Length: 430
Image 1 (spheres, rainbow, N blue to C red):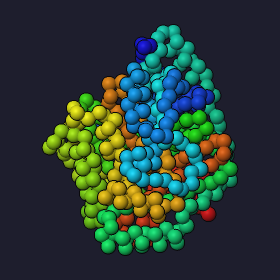
Image 2: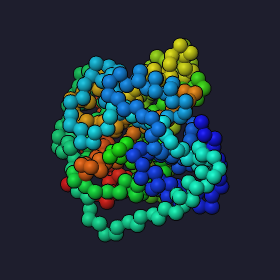
Image 3: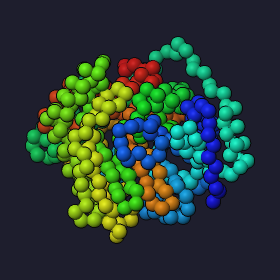
Image 4: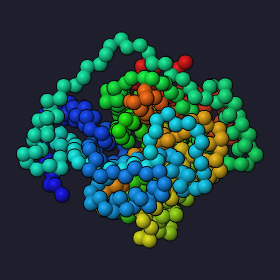
């Protein structure tokens, strides 16, 4: 295993942009960026870039068992993603909708290069002089200039507004009849035959969002540009941490208005009901993998501020049982309850019935697993997906439907969540 070298750089933000542009010349790239987010004690990596696959795992069947073997044989930190449709391997479910992107069900790779930044220092898994040769190569990169006055990108809703509103009414009726308590209903917004620059697009999205679980992932011709505020699951030592989000309100124009909106969110009965239902679901998911009595809610209804929205986030922790493999802890909690609803199996069946697009990597997860079995994974939301061979571009957004939901307000929330991606793309909804 190569040793590492740490170097202090004068302009670390410029280096980050050039490093991602350099990385994009390779077939496989994963960037994880916390954006120095100050409001969580559990940030694992500030900024880490993994580039070029020495070995990779691409699988559709028996994915979790294959991941165990791949991780055990890697001898290093591996990076990758799990798509939402792995639900079909966790439970007896299926995914029938069209998929315009083509991500595999699960993908992990062992990188040739890793660059990790903390403060103004970059650490690279290379010795002298190769580290300095690599830094020199990156610093010589010329950042591509934006094309000004580009026409607006035309985006189409997979589920039209009237159909979405009708579906929300039907979901509410099922909730009233006791079929389930809460269902996360999402809509895809897409464009075909498009051309974008994924690196520039991610940089704009990331700069505008400053989200703590942002990610850029390139797997061949497929791209993820993610500005996620949400953690799915983290393991450090034997401690598991999950931080589900349920509850969203816009940012205020000034401090006074924003304070009022934050209090409005904190005291919103519907939002609190949504949040506590998912917290109970997460507690149950973690209990499957944990020492009896170790599951705790460290924070309930925490209000966290991001660039464009305020969110209600709760933190649930547990102690991993020594009898449970850490990959099984991921499997036992997957997919994350904040993107399904409760009870999980029943709502996943109904999600398949009501939604019109395959979720794929949306509401899946991106992250890393160390050689020692520690890991950290986000929830893939607030994301743009792109296939640069077909030109298919997609983003999805949704919300939790409960007994108290008002269909028109649910649709407004979907548009609010999609706004950051739409603005980044200079797009308008047809």
